[in-house]
Amino acid sequence: MNKFGLLGFIVAALIIILATRRFFEQRKQNEINGHSAVATYQVTVTEKKDYPYPNMRSRERDVVFPETFRYEVHFMPLSGKTIVVYIKEDEYKEIALHSRGTLSMQGTRFIRYEPLR
Image (tube, rainbow, N blue to C red; front, side, top):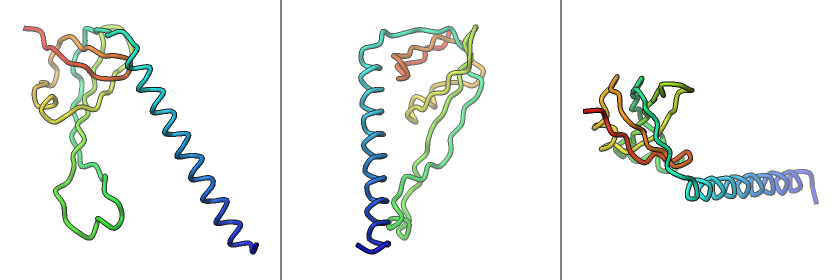
């Protein structure tokens, strides 16, 4: 086997190993989230971001598609570290910046945000 063939084989094996590892990490996190109790936090919305998210493969970049947006909200609990969640557009639009309310999370999974009335 020549050097390029061996190098190609090693690169392919490395890609397969890393992809498999990532798959099992995501599967484990989903299982942990599914078995976690729902936790509620009293929070303040400190920041909201929406930005284009490139989720296209290289061959798809030739055709112009509407951009996919990622919606990110930063919550500051009354005591603790900032919680960053990625949510859907309709949930993002309902959350007002600097509002206070109750954040419900199941592990790292966002469940809902209810502003104080």
